Amino acid sequence: MRVLVVDDSVVFRSAIKSALDGVSGVEVIGVANNGKIALQKLAQSSVDLVTLDMEMPEMGGLETIREIKKARFPVKIIIFSSHTPRGSEAALEALIAGADDFVAKPTADEPGWEHAAAKIRGELLPKVLQFLPKEAPQSNALKQADAVTSNRGSKYAKRELEMFKPSALVIGSSTGGPPALELVLKGLHAPLSIPIFIAQHMPPVFTASLAKRLKESSGIETAEAVHGEKVVKNKIYVAPGDYHMELVKVGDHIEISLNRNPQRNSVRPAVDFLFETASEVYGARTMGIVLTGMGEDGLIGAKTIKAKGGGVMIQDRGSCVVFGMPGAIFQEECFDAIGNLETINAQIIRMSS
Image (cartoon, rainbow, N blue to C red; front, side, top):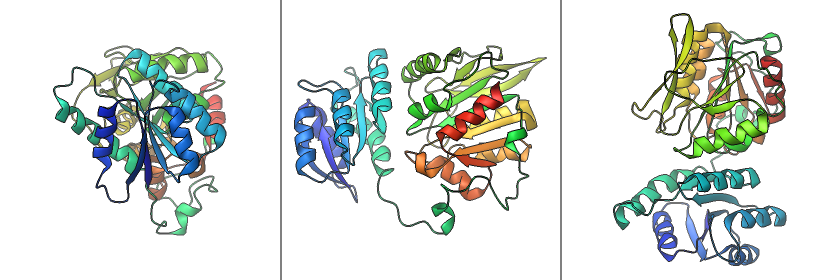
């Protein structure tokens, strides 16, 4: 994988290059200090991935993304964004415009260069490696993933989703999740007959901006979940960054519980926690949806939902930025249907009306 590093800071360019140097299958083929130079290099060289700062002179990150998409350069884009409300909103704009993933830049008060460099390496490497070309699938199953509409021969009892009216909808997503969430929640008809819960892999501040954007795009009351709040219908709850979101039965109602227990699947919030606890309180009337994302978070949760008689739908490989999370569920056959974002959106509208 050939990588172009774009950042107006010599310090950050050096840190990013250092983080990637020596990684098997990854080669930093150049650097640029603004978007204009980056576009020139993309036109002259073969590049697979661009790391892109959002705030640069001459041409910033958002404009650069739009020009990359306009020129149809076949590159993946990972943006670096400041860990502030303004930075998080800019990051979401970039993801909607076509960026594939993001990394929060270390703040100015990080204790020393070595700590900041280590943080960049720790957060950037997994996001770069997820885009490395994979070996051919082990079987024809994954090759057929885009065409499959429902599971066949699964050990889990199949739910006919067209006839299913759940009591709650839980959604898990990671890489590529924000724009996917906007699309699957578009056009909902208020008032919703059920609550919707979302676990998106994002750090603090960014999830607040995500909730704000989903509220604007869906037209439904959407907010970061609050510890101890009573769950109501006609609301979308987003797990706050760095907190697991769980659902608990308290007397005659259901409450949200937030905690900072150890990471699970190397993330917090974890989709598995949300799915497992939702199936405990809603039982067979739980509907889980797993969207694009790397790793296997959501697999155990999907198994739990299916074991209790609930429904599970996954995003198809063709419309995913990364088919990791839904792909893991596909391989284990613990789902009821698979489809693109438009198909999932239609199901959510029907189930929540």
